[in-house]
Amino acid sequence: EVQLVESGGGLVQPGGSLRLSCAASGLAVSSNSVSWVRQAPGKGLEWVSIIYSGGSTYYVDSVKGRFTISRDNSKNTLYLQMNTLKPEDTAVYYCARGRLGHDYWGQGTLVTVSS
Amino acid sequence: DIQMTQSPSSLSASVGDRVTITCRASQDISNYLVWYQQKPGRVPKVLIYAASTLQSGVPSRFSGSGSGTDFTLTISSLQPEDVATYYCQKYNSAPWTFGQGTKVEIK
Image (cartoon, rainbow over all chains, first blue to last red; front, side, top):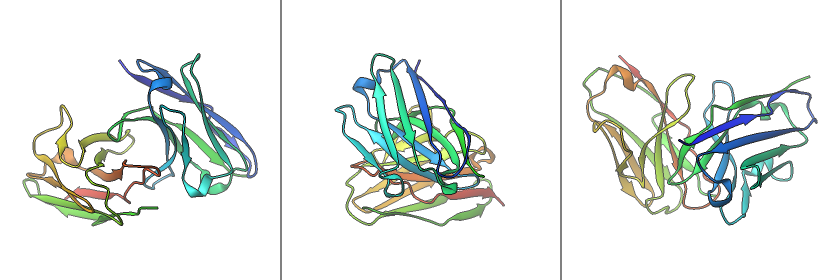
């Protein structure tokens, strides 16, 4: 059974940093493409970033230069390093496998950027 | 980047009605389109992938069609459990942009 479990969310001040983790079981992050998707309170889904199975990484324009996606194959874990956080980054952040869309999702971790 | 435009943003229909949601891509994405259903407080669930392929376990009243730039999600007979927000998403290349969502309610 595939499971994706996010952690690392919390309250952070504007300009601060957080690192989100997504621990995978039942699939290998090294051979799968995995995305981060976020959803601001009461808003729609927003794709944030992807790391393809081959290692290429891509970002939505609003986070380029501030967020970095990475993976640790030995821990079977995906990460999202988020720097220079802004109030508009407040959202639930999901990791999701990228195969024919996103077929497996974690339950999400809430990031709140506020002073 | 390719933009994904969904319409309508919300709709209200009666149980048993046929419901149609459209999604338009600003450039050709072939059939690299997926439809999700998201119920309040829940994680999105794949309904249709590759524009028209029904995900295993999804009721047959859901169907998808289209290719290129114009796509449609149809619910042939709306049921109370279909109250949710529906999203399209492209996945041919990054960014994997979502549509804005369509909120479906029962009249």
